[in-house]
Image (cartoon, rainbow, N blue to C red; front, side, top):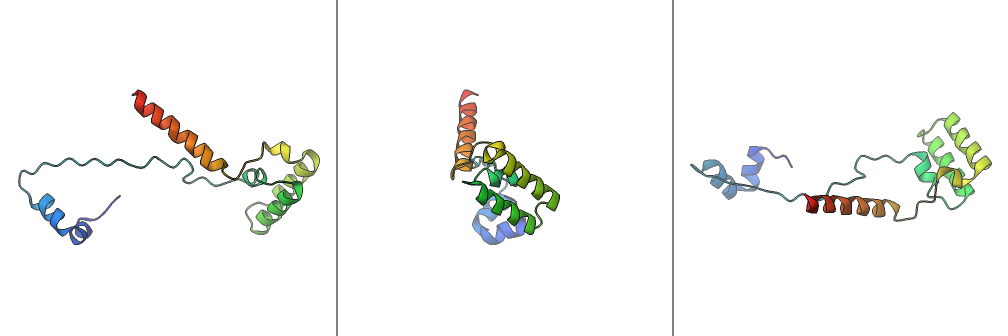
Length: 119
């Protein structure tokens, strides 16, 4: 978290006075951060949306929606439609359940915790 000194003084006047005006004052601040979010900045791709669909009709609606919003080109949309019709949903990988991203994040956090304990 970044904060300007003026804002710090305004929000925490007593603490600012102790820290900034103290002579020979020595402080140590440690912050225990939340674990990093493995999905921060991640933008789902059309295949991510398709893998959440329960049937081909649903997947085709997703493709239509993405094309209509300009998130994929007409050519890409047509290719996704072709692949869906020719090979089915399975072509794009196993279905992502409703809590798929939470489970993956949980696995990531568990691995981080184990690494920290081992070091």
